[in-house]
Image (cartoon, rainbow over all chains, first blue to last red; front, side, top):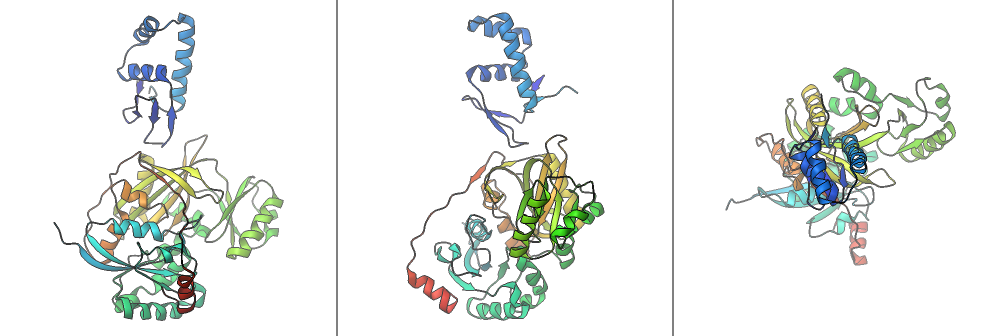
Length: 82
Length: 350
């Protein structure tokens, strides 16, 4: 799973897809996760990082993470596996 | 510092209204040029076209006759304007006037005025009424279209045309109809305004995308810019848009240019279908679009390149541009002395 190279993401959480022209906003947590995905960090490392930093249950993180990732896939921000 | 080349350019489409003509943005692009030092002559049909009163952009405006008055009257008027202004280039910006300007190309050239327009065959072939055959001939996906001349013909449409449908005028205007009654209402409204025939088109739900560009007439794409509409007015016009770079749009555009050998400026209206992500070509406008100032904003000043082609200069293709640049339209009120309206209305020039 990889964030497309062409996607522009600002620190304020503004995401622009220059191929489709679509733009989205995400919160600070979203930016952190996107940056970790960009750095090609594995799911377990992302989970550890977030759970160290924030008070969140493992199951709650897992659910929210996959919800978020499926949104990124739907908006074609993530390169789909071939 | 390079000395800029002096050029006198006549431009139509000064109706900078809610459904704007491309004239004012074309002029703004030309004014941004670092190659040309331009004198701009406005050519207006109506005395309240806002561009007439924009003296910071247009040096002088002349009224010209509507295309319905015939080519001879138009030519005589332009000849008169030319005797005063010594026009180097004309950039016509309305679909409805293009036929006359294309036909007058040689005569205009004889009096020293250059154009760079599609051939009459290219102009006719891309017409909305010919879109199906155009798509077949060049292998471009287009929505199924039918031409009708009477509201009763809605009952004779093939069964594969399902509602909603798009009801379109020959030159301008389009409305979406969900049933036959609505379609007939739109038919009457559009036919009264723009005449017959009316085009009935399969409605494709999806994202509206536009491409503007320039063909050299030999099959080469000189430049292009793609844009996604971000804010659409009730007239279906883009009030805001953003430059994008989608390889599918680039391929469609290059295919269009290579196969048709399009000469001059154009705009492709494309829709990316929601469910399938297929691209459908809805319309080919044989001219510069009203959002052309974005081309300057992204680094491909298409009107400037068009001027160079008009005067016979070589233009190297420029197919890269900045993405993520937006245009956002606005309107403002100018304060104009009534004497100016008097002058354009009575003397036909200002």
